[in-house]
Image (cartoon, rainbow over all chains, first blue to last red):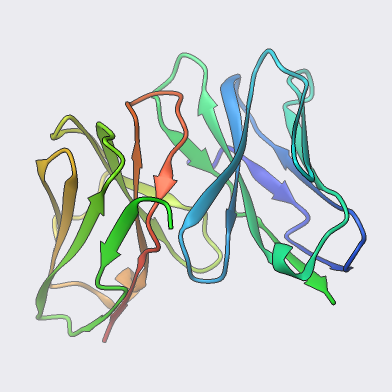
Length: 112
Length: 113
């Protein structure tokens, strides 16, 4: 069953701009992860944020987590054409089966 | 790229064929997964193996048959598939079951005619 839902479904920006993608989920989580997928390829893990963390950074990526609103955001700063990909959030439910449940993803296009 | 390889990368098969997808991980992980990714649908978990034992089977039709001969290899045997089974099949591995990061292979693009 789908747990996370990304918003927007598609996002088109110019190189150099920031891109923000949001993820909402329904049940209490142990952690939330963001993955990236280039067209027709496998997923690459970007960042994991635990339920007791509020913000995490990795290079140009910034992830926030608001457990009271059951939402997370992924910010990519100073975007590049190479950031063009689909971005997925995935949750691990607290106290539930230990599997990742993915959303449908946000398709990001960064125009040069 | 990520230490998880999948073969073949592309497969076209008829509904009466039998074929197998292969996944190999070079990361020393104990858990392996099969996912199905169809257009405009979330990634669907199909099977989970931990230390070569199947721990999850998400109501997958019997025309998909997994096999895990050792902790580094995972197969998905296919027979009498339907056109709606056309999708990208992704293999992943993680150090252990649980709240850990998963590492994905590049996928096999399957087309069923």
